[in-house]
Length: 333
Image (cartoon, rainbow, N blue to C red; front, side):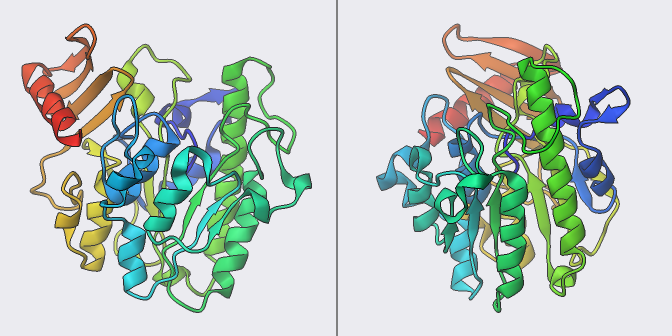
């Protein structure tokens, strides 16, 4: 789960240097979803969207209400019941925003965090850099004797966007710092996947790369673009490779799609759908403070809950998307 991984960055080059050259290379080797939308705009909204298929709320998150979040199904719990190891890796403090509570009740074990790394490997604010955590992920997985459902939440591309290596793009403005941090994590992810390919478990493994949420930068003038986050399926266990899926899909769909591949009950994730099912209607829903967005095959719509009106419309979107978005909002609460 890549911190602030925005789809917009895939298309940015500065002085003929791509921001994400490794990801752009890797996306040709698996199943790439080019039109996926994050459910929210914060990590503590993205994690339950990914692992529980639960939509983000505009002004809060379900994991701030443990009495409610404990009722959520979580992918890690389903895998743990099947005998899988379920480690979670993060260079920062898992306790932040009550994330650790959600991870624990979801069956993640162990939870590796900031206290498991040396002070010399920390940035000034959040925790250990991605390159350090990546080595720990590989080390632990190579020691694992059971099949594993492992999750790694990256950190470096969170503000203040500090990197432990020389910057590639010159500049001290926020946008340039952000792009440099993505470029660093991209190199780490590329090294990680190349290392995974050399491991004996690679041929039996699926690796999914996606963002916890998108980002405001770089600006495009379209609010919906801020919620686009790439998703890429890799691994020796993939039956098909070199595929691009460009229909609208949601971060929420990860839970049901994985469940379908492993024979779990997809009904445990009622807001999620199997994106590999050709009969599934494509749509995505996202929220932000006092607003929501809805995307389907007809177009994209962004709605302002305060002004009670759409503030962005593309394609043939209109009243149907407003009704669908409002219905989602009512159901989530």
